[in-house]
Length: 279
Image 1 (cartoon, rainbow, N blue to C red):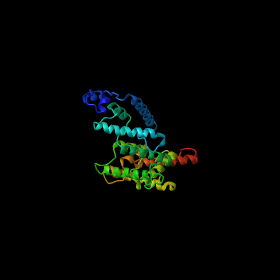
Image 2 (image 1 turned 120 degrees about the horizontal axis):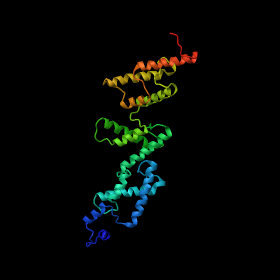
Image 3 (image 1 turned 180 degrees about the horizontal axis):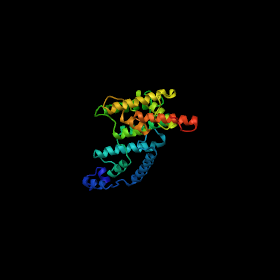
Image 4 (image 1 turned 60 degrees about the horizontal axis):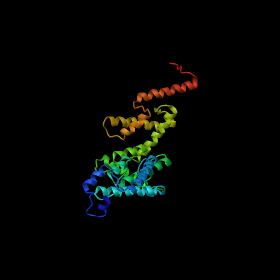
């Protein structure tokens, strides 16, 4: 009856109401194609387990067949939403949604670029893609676009393309939202991390000539932290505070002085073999 209706025969008994009722329970109209659909669905599931998303790039030759199938699901989904005859069903769309399927192409492209950024980080150790990046020019432009969208969001612009989920995914990769001074800050944080790995704390003594620059930076972090706490304009952010806290950073100077004196005691012991410092 369904095929008769598709062929335009007026005497079909499969009226719209019955079709809707059958669609609601996931009725499969075209049996010979249903097995193929579920086979492809399983392929997509495996793809997601490997790559973390359902954004199968068309340019990838090893997944060309799957990418075309993904595109077809989008077309059929649009047809279904418009009330037209299609192989897409509510059951199939639910199954795809359960995988985190992306129905809009621009969202798919976003995840493809995120994959490119992930590969860049694996190769270079960070997400600081140059704006003009010859091996992958679109990636450099895309990274810059994310920063602009983030600034728009902070400024209260409603049309920002960034969502909480996207920000979470980028933060998870270690994305740097502000360049310039931010890059220098992360470089110094890396130096402080190395210092702690050697000395066991973050109290860099100002009198130590070999770490003078780092000691000045540590001192500045305390200053801008107190500015932030007092509600004054400051380059310190909650995110930076969290990163410094995770290193065991000492915000109060007297705590830092204690660690400095502990270093002096360690040096004394190395020289004299004990901690019996004369009064």
